[in-house]
Image (cartoon, rainbow, N blue to C red; front, side, top):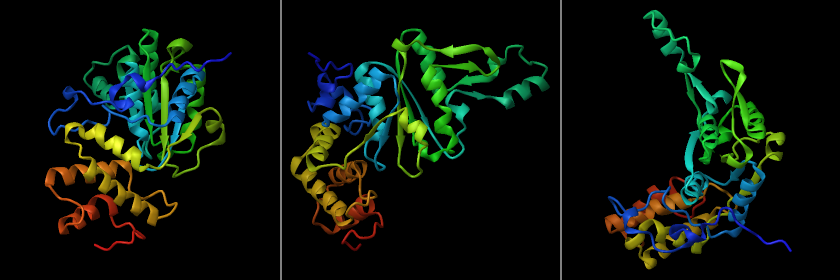
Length: 301
């Protein structure tokens, strides 16, 4: 009989499981950073991470901005005690940027100074996948975040199919020499998209796909408790969560409503400034953290 055995199990992590956050994770303001806590209260998401690990496929995360897509990867790396590398995609990102960067200016300067190296490797900087493959070769596994892939040219997602499928790619200066990693030491690649551009079907077929759900009140309170630690006040956190959900409800299915990240901004500002919902000052705080000129919120500023 089959039995579900998790390679990734956040239950043993205090922050992920909903336990208290250790005091040493509370420098400065006393608030935890995004890469220090993540509330894994959706068993389906934990299963999706495990499926990606066991199949060797990238985990592609859909969800509106601020829903926690980008912060999942560093927290998975933290819980697994793996290395972590990230690349934020822009409209100028080239496929090679995820593998390497060629420093043409350094080579030109060296040539002009008659210091040109015979080793082409001296002019290449490994990208996140290269570093992850090399770490895997040393039996240190990695989590790689490729953030906001929909910002890139449509050709970029398909260009990843080769390196991610074969866990190998040729070095740019020598096609006979490859950067590669064994299957058992392959990185977990987490890719996020805001769904602003349709991704190629061949790319989607080769990913484990998960769509993060809109935040619930229970989820918001658990996130607040983990981020604020000793500063958490359930009454204040609940009031602001109710206001956020009201705004989202006014907007119907529009995904651009206030996110979990904006909820934390409003809650931290409310706590630090001593501004509570229902006051004149709160109207302004709500406007700059939650409403943000969003139409259809049912409120005026």
